[in-house]
Image (cartoon, rainbow, N blue to C red; front, side, top):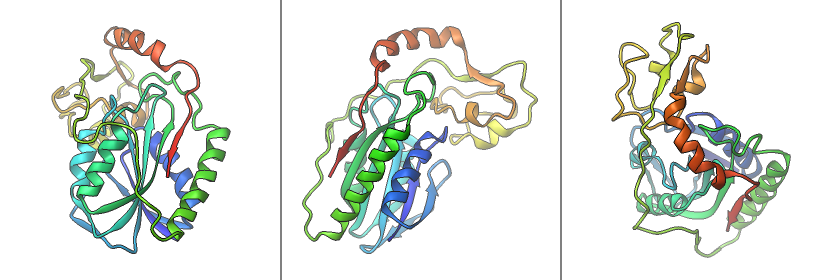
Length: 250
C-alpha cells in the first residue's frame, strides 16, 4: 500500500509524528508540504492520503486550510492527524474533517497526538516517546484493517462542525537577537512571507506564530520577546502540565 502524506509542519514535530503513523499504514509514501504553495491537485478513489496538521489554539492553521482547498478528491480515503502541545485540540479534527469532505475526501480514521509545544518546549517534552510510537504503530495496523474492510462506516470525531471556536491571536512575533548574521534563512523559510528585506522587518499581520523562523535559524538567533511570552506561559502552564493521552478514532 502507498499513500500521500500531506503535512503542515513548521517546526518538524507534526511531520515526525506523521511519518511514524504513515510507516505503519503504508510501505511507500510521497509528501506534499503545505508550507509551500500548492497547485491544483486531484486524487482518485484508489488513492490514500494522510493529512497531518498542528492545532493552533484549537483550530487548523488558516494557511494550511487555504492550501488544502487546492487539493481535490474523488472519493479518496483520508486519515486525519492532529498534533498539539499537551493543552487541547478542541475543534481541530472536526474542522479538518469538514474541510476534507468538502474537497471530496472520505475520512476513515483520525488521531490527536501529543508532541512538544512549538513555543514552550517543556510542555509535551520528548513526545512522541517510545510509548507513543508503539501506540501509533498499533493504530496504523488497525487503520490497514479498516481500509481492507468494505463499508467500514462513517468517522466521528470530537469538536464542533461548522461552528468552530474563534481564532485567537497572540501579541508576540519572533524577533532577531544579537546572534543574527543576516543569512536570510528565516526570510526564505517563512511560509507567509512575513519577513522583509532584513530579519528585523516583520509584518505582524502576516506572522502566524508558527515558529518556523525560530526552528530553522542556523545560529539560534530568533526568539519571541520573553516579556511578551510571560503572560501566555502563565496561562498555559496549568493547562499543559501532566501527561495527556493520544486520542484515536476509527
